[in-house]
Length: 170
Image 1 (cartoon, rainbow, N blue to C red):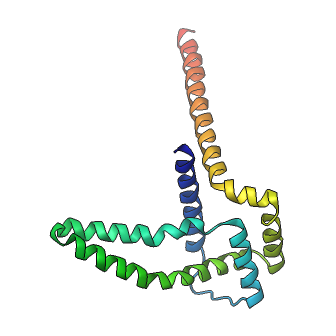
Image 2 (image 1 turned 180 degrees about the horizontal axis):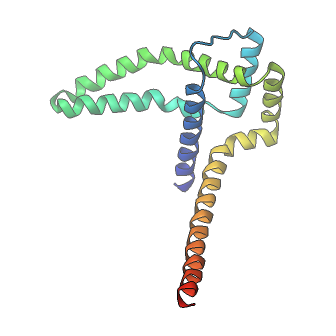
Image 3 (image 1 turned 120 degrees about the vertical axis):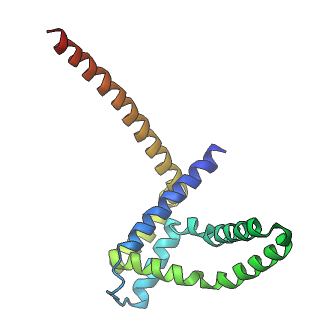
């Protein structure tokens, strides 16, 4: 259960990082990339498992939509389920648009050769393990950093309080 939670946190962090990256891309500047460059980006993204967390976007949106309509009209739950499921299946065909944007984000930041090197590494045993455990490692590292920061804060307050009390006595 903890591992699932950590995976979810890691994927959320990855999603947030990608959202920031996407927002930082100027919409006016439309660079064009060769098919080989975009293919290298796709291979690197697949190898790093960078978009796995996005597979839940459509089901999550469908669930929120379903809940919105059911709250408004609970008597139509069956119809709402059917319609939302139909719409979700129709919208699934739009996923390649997201993938294309992500390929371009990577292509904008890495040369074709760098992307090939990334894919090559992540297709090794060590790289595959890193891709698989990346979310957990990020979540655990952030948890450790938070704990360390909290302990450091307590220590700083205690030491500062002690020194300030000494100054007050003097």
